[in-house]
Image (cartoon, rainbow, N blue to C red):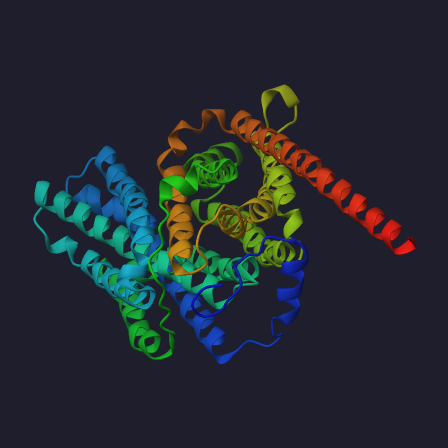
Length: 442
């Protein structure tokens, strides 16, 4: 138990988990409702602000004399600093305070989003490039702070339903990513470069007074464990590779599939977003379902991870499709595979957070914000690693297949080891019972 008396988030399965799950009230408390409102509004607005750069920033940067390579580096530096800051904020969450980190993160994120809107007034050349890098880096750090604190607060407020809540909130993240580009493009076409950033940045800033009033302030003592001890746990290491691979897959699809659809099916540029909508909607819809199943049946999480990986590998083979399959590429087949890919992503990604958390508690980590911060930071860092490595995704399918098979083998060996360790205990119990019966007869 932690200071508040909460059971371990995510649970470890078995009778203890069942008992605590039954004790969980069916209706949300006022505190839980406020936490959900804060997290959902942050996910929606932050994802919208994050995604508005794509439609028009490259065009504006070219006017300022920025090369395509440099534009790619401006986009890519976000993942690098998100990776580094996630580890730092996860480690020092308890010292900084989860509520302060959350509010400070969205405050800075909203401010730099507005600042991005005035970069067109900066002189061309090196000064403009330097300012773009600085603003993008600060935005990555602030978003990392907000999302690390948000995940930790959610896990603290919903100790028995971590996966359900995180999966449900993916709906708002997906909506933000879907709505951001068209809204940003419309505002850009109608009012110019500044308005999209000022509008969305202001929305993020308007959330601050609300969160100051409604967000609970959780406190905890610092823990003794580190990221290194967490990531060196074998099961956590395997799950980290799951997070990296799926992040890499999403990053791989975004630029490559867009060009493929335009060239193969000769679609207008506006219809490419509708093709991606199949992936985004299926992921957003399936995430709450797999979150609920992960919380209700924690012993099934590992198989969600294994089969989700294998299904995803099959989807990637059919996206092209692979030449060895001798299947003609068709638009309806592409959309169907993207829908299935979104479902398999929900099956694999959503159980990772509670599974890592359960594994941490099984290996002696403290129950409280300290461990929640480490797990949140690790999740964000591994997702950023995937974003950094998508350009090396030519071996995507073999990597996912091998990872899925390796995880399946690991879980089978773990299950076999646990069964062997439980047999001597059963033998001892049986002998004690027989001895007791004989003594009663005597």
